[in-house]
Length: 566
Ligand code: ATP
Ligand code: MG
Image (cartoon, rainbow, N blue to C red):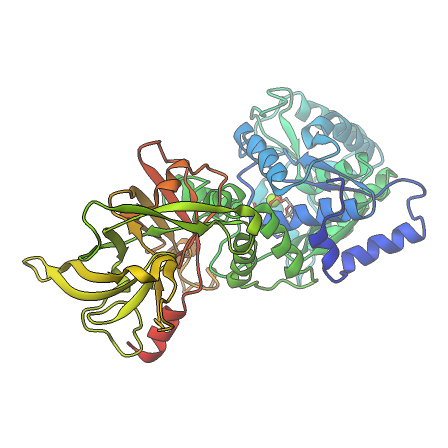
């Protein structure tokens, strides 16, 4: 983005910004501009945790007139796919950012290999024939030093010969690795001769069968940063212990000294942010794909109706820190409601319809009432909504026997139909099972527009849809995907997926909507009055619309109901 964006400007400073500001002040990188990168592995779809990293990487570079690369960290051919590459580019753009350069770690394979040879020649790397298990056993623990591999002191010649032949494909997968020769007694386990290359006869989505040795993350990442002359490589806290190794490679090779800085991962209550586990949800069909509106993926929350503006504001407000914590999902919802309140067009929709017949409304008459499209935004204009003698109201808006403090419709009570008329309930019609199928009422023609004709007051205003004009639609209501605030709060032998909320979606098939919604488009946002924020789902076809509830409005009655037990 070229314009400094107001969301990040409005937030208090943080330690990342302070470090960069200081580096700019002392001209640590001379006249070079600040360079950052966002480095996803293309092994899944981006989630809202990645949105935090994206906003930090792109947002901070932008603030300092710098640049950001999108770099695919594609060093794991078995788990990576072009589908993920494509979705990641789409999601970064959707969030509102654009990259300076599109890079792939795989483009650096030849250079990384050359540098590995350089380390071998300098006696800083060796080929090890131990198995993965043996290497693990030799590594030691936090309290015990590791043991040298019997192959640690191979000659440079032998190492060069073996490493070259590893590359040429002479050895089977897992038979040998290249390791950095650092310190098997280091208190930091990452420094105990970490693996640099493994043998893997797997076809890579970009380099195809060119390579059968692949660099490990720690060896590829810092060198890729350095090659791109990244000044500040910001990543999440789990890489803190890897930083000495990150610096070791750069120092040994004498290349551009990128600095790594760690910040906290975004964790949100009732939400699981891990590509690997999200993939499992998709593969096991616990959700309907990566873009299921219950998913915390960017494509999922986009389909649910969330907006990039609200996500950026939320990420900025949740801040950065040097310790991991949880952010309440209510905070995300708060910023999204705030955003939708300003942008969403109002409409009337009845989710669980109950027929209301106005006995004294002239038979066959219909009329139009004028309704504001968005009371928060007068430029949104008004529209004409049809009204007639038979309308739908919500089942919840009528009680034959009203509980205490119930101010909506009940026999003998008068309420306002929003922008239309005052009506008073008179009687009910029930089916054989005793369910109310129709409510009969009378209206006051003098209250047209919903205005009191004589100053008398009503306690409730209700939304409605004219039965003859209504369109039918399917409505999907979503709850949290997980039942526990911390989905990783597990009993013994439990998996995080055991904490899935079994009731995370409810589908209503007989909703009635005002006719203007027949023209809804995918990117439109609506507030269904008194019900919540909604958007059209891509499953819709012209004759059969499907709407997703992005978020409910805060329902004061539901709270009161809970409190009073009504
Ligand atoms: P996951 O565990 O979900 O696969 P990851 O860290 O493996 O995440 P990468 O593709 O390696 O995913 O991440 C790209 C960048 O996004 C990294 O810099 C990583 O630190 C950052 N990132 C990933 N998850 C989060 C999160 N929850 N909060 C903030 N940043 C994150
Ligand atoms: Mg990762």
